[in-house]
Length: 287
Image (cartoon, rainbow, N blue to C red):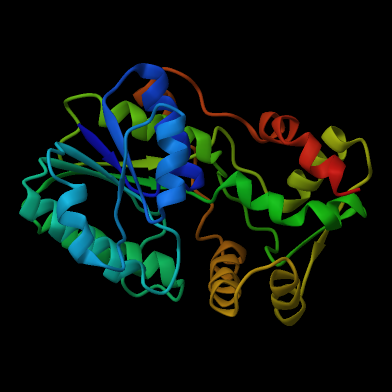
């Protein structure tokens, strides 16, 4: 039996959908009874559990063979994920498949990159078998900017930096694959999209798909921070994104596509144009 943490989130929810479609036995974990009720209404086994209350995890992990571990990038991330790893070890879980980050580094100024590095170290030393997935930046992050795109501009502070952006649905597809297969013991997979592109390229693709002229505005840091706050990001998240985009400007995210998504799943990852077409209504509604 697989236990999916983050089952109500973007990646975790998609993992649940794909596991259900494949007929794989799994259980989703959620913090609220109404979330559990919705899962069960949809024919999905679900259990209450809260990573901020480690005492709730023992029951949630009873009878679990494999754990899928993903949490939101928030200040308590290290405490939450290490608690999950420790609970899994005590419950006799055999393997953990964890979402990490391609830029994880214990010395990083990006809080979630530093957090993932610390958690990955903890997992590798836990005694539980593991598989670690390290994706690049998510294409879904562009959905933060639907309103400015509707007005004809893409406001970011990325300079000329390029990234092999990945659709989070492809991350979930890889996760669902390795969760249901043998042979991924102690493996670390770097996951990318099919191409590397900068923000000028992104604006050109947005122009084509939305059928409106979209210009990339390379913002100074103070202005970019204001835009991030106005698009709903917390101060902690905005500062982290400033650090991440500074790395992008410096070229630290300009890595060649790895091809791991297709190698592991047999299907190529979605390109940016396909992602935009799939979400065209979101940009259209913002107009």
